[in-house]
Image (cartoon, rainbow, N blue to C red; front, side, top):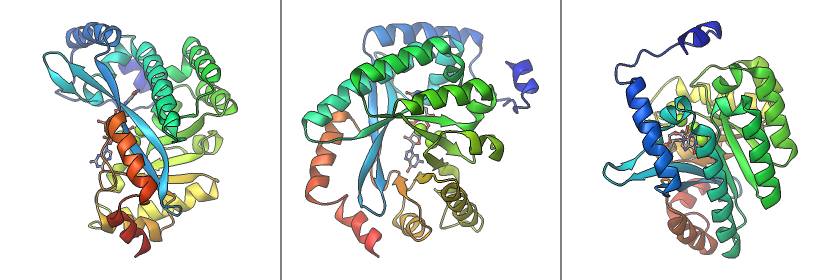
Length: 288
Ligand code: C2E
Ligand code: MG
Ligand code: MG
Ligand code: MG
C-alpha cells in the first residue's frame, strides 16, 4: 500500500491508532459474520433542496450493531473491509438493502433517490461494477453513488469509464468530501458527476472563520460553471444555512436538518415534511 501510495503521490497517513494487520484480519472476520447475520443496518440522512425547501434525496450510511461491542461507526470498519477484501460484499449488501428500503418508502408515497458511498477500489473492480449494475437495473432502483476524487486518482481511466457506465444506467454520481482530499481540476472536468459535496471541514466553521466562506463561495461558483449542483455537508447552525442560501448553494445536509436516522424514523420525518416543509424552524431560516 505504501509503495502504491508513493507511486500515485498520495500522502500516507502515519496514524498511530491505525489498526495493524492482525486487527484488520480480526475485524474482517467478524464483519463476514456480521453481513451474514444481519448485524449491519443503514441510517439515512436527508439532503434538503434549498430553493424548493423539500427533501431532495437521502444518503445511506452503514452502521454495525455488534453483539458485544455495541454500535460501531463506519470509520471503524470500512478500512478493514477494504483491506480484508470484503468491501465488495459489504457494498452489494448496502445496495440490496437500499433497494428494499426504497420500495418501502415508495409504498408510503415517497419517491426518493438513495445515495450510497462507494469505495474507490470498487471503481476498478469489474466484477463489482457488473454485479452492481445488474442488480440496480433489475430492480429499476433510483440510486446515486458518492465517490471521492482521491479514489478516482488511483486509477483514473477505469474509474472514469465505470462511473460513466453507472451514469448511463441512471445512477447520479456525486463527488463526496470535495476539498478534503486530492483535488484535480483535470479529473473534475472529466467526471460524469452531477453533484459536488463540499466537505464538512469547510462548512462546520463557516460563520466563524475568515477563509472558509471564500473557499465555499468559490467552490459553489466552480461547480455551477461545470453544471453541477452543490451540496454542503455538515450544516449544523441556522447561521451557516443562511449564508449558504445567500451563496447559492443548491442542497444542504447536516445535523441542523437531521442526523442520520433509521428507516422508520425517516418515514416519520417524511410524514411531517408532507404537512410542513422541512421543520418550521429551518423554514424560517430559509425565508429570512
Ligand atoms: P461521508 O459519506 O462524508 O458521510 C458524512 C459523515 O458526516 C457521516 O458520518 C455523517 O454522520 C456525518 N455528518 C452528517 N452531518 C453532519 C453534521 O452536521 N456535522 C458533523 N460533524 N458530521 C455530520 P458517518 O456516518 O460516521 O460516516 C463516515 C464515513 O464512512 C462516510 O463519510 C463515508 O465515507 C463512510 N461510509 C458510510 N457508509 C458507507 C458505506 O456503506 N460504504 C462505504 N464504502 N463507506 C461508507
Ligand atoms: Mg457520503
Ligand atoms: Mg462526505
Ligand atoms: Mg466525510
